[in-house]
Length: 484
Image 1 (cartoon, rainbow, N blue to C red):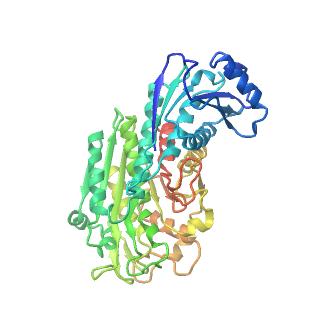
Image 2 (cartoon, rainbow, N blue to C red):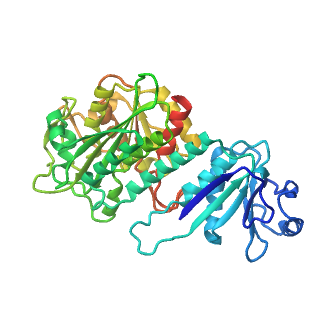
Image 3 (cartoon, rainbow, N blue to C red):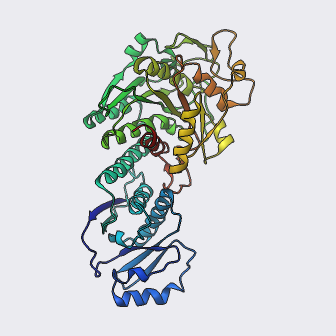
């Protein structure tokens, strides 16, 4: 469904059809007298007592052509509360199926700041649905004209729209099937973002081999598709400050390779590139809103397939860092992609910090379900910033342990390390412990295991099911609050 928002500062005509109006948490409508007709005010007053006031949004059928939607704002309203109200309002708009509404920001009590911006943000985030391959699409287009003095500033409008576009781009990428968004196509799509001012560099198989990125290349060598490392640079700061670095796992489809996964639910492995999609969506949003920071996004793009040239269990490969890895299980492939990407990012860009994102382990879903992403880090300050940012936008993270005592679980008799812990237990921690070995210069680093957060079969507060785009809003908030 297409949602179009138009901001207009002129007064709202009382005759406007389909109004969205705001009240306090007690549904006191005294302040609405000057915004609706006398007959409408009387009608709503008579019916209000009969409505379920426990609901946060109630609707009134004024006549066959006009509806009035009342949204109550609780006393200690947060930005997230306003966004969730917007998401609930979208569900109502979707049921009503009217095409035009007027939202009067002047009905928002003065004590609330920027409610309308977050409310509309919630509407738009909830409206997303991936219907690209459906022959019968929901073609309903809703226009919301926002009037009054409390509309967001142009800067805030740009911020909201850029985050929405970045989130939607991430959701689009994650939703694409593996036969469409294979590594070759994915690299081309990223290249198209150069028109936004991003500096894009694509390293192909030949270049990666020359660089010595054998852990990344090993994952993709069973596929007929190419393997790539793609860098995206945004230089939005006037000074030459160190960039913020974001690294993503982009396994476009993961069969498990020779260590083949069970057939049931293997179709979900088209989502195994979600970490990279977050990085791409974030970089797009930073470019769109002209963020005043320097940032770099790095993604490793591969397809993990069984084949005559596929990597075997027992193989030993030499990483870009020079460290050697014994491959005990080809289905523990994401950490191999990230290993080379992390060392390369640290060495080439010398960033202020590195945050990597990956649908890395099923173990993190066992630990945290679909409520929190797992956070592993070598830096308390960066960890605390991520926790605070996640709480603010309801994209939460939970810090998990790293400790040298876990190293014995991934030490190999035949190489510097092995790619899986065969003893059992601590699956997510040993994966993170593996990644930490490829941060060579003590750069502040955080790993976000988003396996339980990237996709929702049932939908959430701000998404309607499918790809969630988790991480784009979290990282934008981190940048906005602490680094911009």
